[in-house]
Image (cartoon, rainbow, N blue to C red; front, side, top):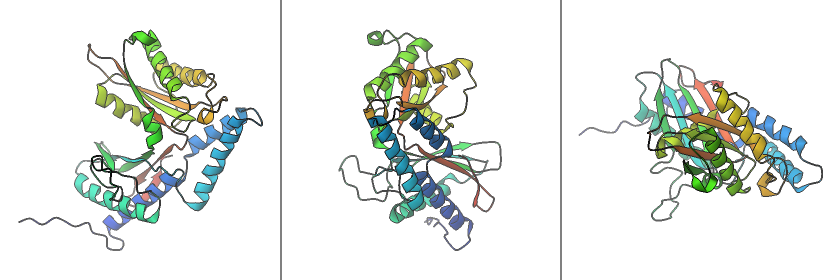
Length: 306
């Protein structure tokens, strides 16, 4: 009978170095907001009127960001669904990586970088250290270089709850199968959220695909930096229009009113079947926890991506 291969964790072994690199990636993702997100938050804070509830809410967010970084403690009590995107060369051992990744998640939870919040959907029990079916969520992609790139996102349940998916045409919104119809349903999702999901937030949107692929791609859009520009001129225009229009709705931070409802909007597109036209919208809270690294040959961290 074949025996299961154990994960080697001897000092300075490739497995131990990979484990430690993942621990550091988890720590940074959970406790430090990426620079591109911090810049937008500071910019929007200056736009809020003085001595308003909106300004107060943004200042609380700013203080939270600073304190979490100083103490290496989670930005939010809900450390969210743990999502990894791994781009790797030919011959990469995905099963072995998964074992090491799961061990790193357990140890990061024990340290306190992650909170124990993975619940059995049938029993409601929370008896594991963030390990279980679908947790963590690991997506592998083979690419043509020799570099291993790992991107990580922590997506909280509150912002996940206000995600939405629309099928066009939508007669209630008078939204047809065109970019104007796409615009209408995105803004409808923002309006329905009404500050829930810990706004101000960022939208990841996918036009097309099937129901599953659309939601997956909408989350992938959240790995884009907030200051990047869409290569498609029509989507570039749509992204800017959504943010500008949403910030005029008066919803504001946490729904308290004000000028900051969205920090950004990123839109992607997939092919679809003639019978279907889905628009999938993923909402990310202000605690926009995503980070990434590339690894050296020995599995130590080579470069931070955000």
